[in-house]
Length: 163
Image (tube, rainbow, N blue to C red):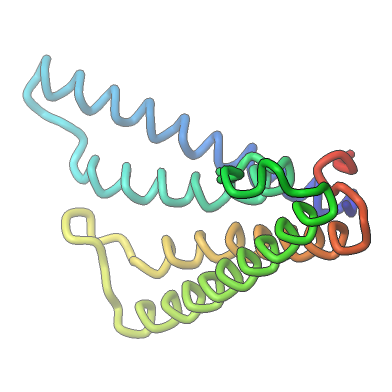
């Protein structure tokens, strides 16, 4: 796997982890404020939805890089290593197509939502920000899945080649 893609996926995961941490702290503060002074953080549910969606998108490339996505191997337990590798390559290609399509449509959605001026209900935040923040993680996941599929087709194990 490309050292650049590995490093980029790591940075995406770090930023995604920070996003999840900030969201968790904000949620705790909002709940505590609601319990103590009956004043939660306005829009806490919106911010939680945005933060966790961005976190998931940014952590997907790292999960894909390390083969940490869910794999159902019930039907391939007795298959040869070559058959399993080919099936994993096909799965990687299908995943790449799916997340690249999602990245494209998410980016297109960001443009459409931005031009429509759509905002969140409580805080009035521009919705295109969230859409735009989701697209890079999805695109990087697709690129990594493509690289892994081609490595598998050439007989290498992409998960063990992670630097």
